[in-house]
Image (cartoon, rainbow, N blue to C red):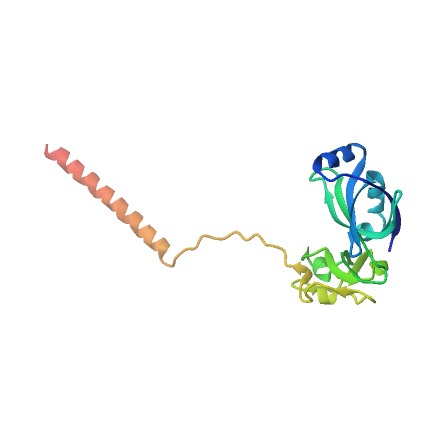
Amino acid sequence: MSEVTLRARAGRKPGSRESRRVRRQGLIPAVVYGSSTDPVPLSVDALDLHAALHTEGGSNAIITLEIEDGDTLTTMARMIERHPFRSEYRHVDFVTVDLSQTVTAEVAISFEGTPVGVREGGVFSPRRTTVQIEVLPTEIPSAIELDVDGVEIGGSLRVEDLPELEGVVYLEELDAVVMSVTAPAAEIEEEPEVVEGEELLEGEELAEGEAEEGAEAVAGEEAESSE
């Protein structure tokens, strides 16, 4: 698990106006708290925060916060608020951790291989790309690899099929589907249904119509000759 150091400034005032002022300075509003730590408003450098959250550990990296003129705290980033459409952080909560106590983490699932069902024309359908686990902070894996080679069309893998890792406890329902391979959707043009005898009926109606038209024509000719 990645461990990084991040310098932080204390003394940030709460409130949206102060947060906007902090962001204009290239800093990100933050707060640190924990079971034995009262919430402390902070600010951290935006570029340094980006680097800290883009190590191998990602958002699960262990971050040593060095607070100016204050304590040094072992933390993890939680409640990371991002800008809705720009690649920017808006706010982040740091939670103190005890490296000897387990924590809850969300870890990416890495699908390894190509399902046999896909090679036969099926469609690979991932149902979830992350999984919640409980583990020691120093043992959080960067990703959990799942071998999908043997999955056939109509088959699936569930949380219970994820590999057993020492010290890792899966917190999801064991029967929750992780991925599946489905049959390709075939576009079938539906032929119009023809009721037995319908063609004959239409032919009879046409013949009757022609006969009626012929009778009307004859009647008209007779009426003209009589005049």
